[in-house]
Amino acid sequence: MSKSTSEVELLYVEVHRRMIENGEWDRMLHLLSSKLSESGWTDDLLHRAKENSRTMDSLSLQTILQELLSHAQTSVPLSVKREITTLIKQFVKEQFEK
Image (cartoon, rainbow, N blue to C red; front, side, top):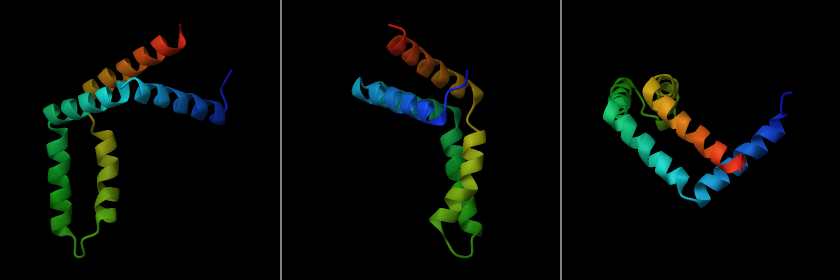
């Protein structure tokens, strides 16, 4: 049986609230940032942003962000995605299977 969109949204809000309350959200953000930096992803994105801005006639932060968003989302290393996803799954299991 599939959950409605509002049920999924409510579950997301509850998981997010719990992660913030116990500090897990900040811990995961720090870990994600570290892993992305270690993999060179952060530097690559910064380099792409600089290159895009150099070729623009009229600088626009909004345009740069739009151009980088797709690349940023698709270029996160699989190992980083798996590690963070595993941590989130463990957190959810611990919180809701008590």
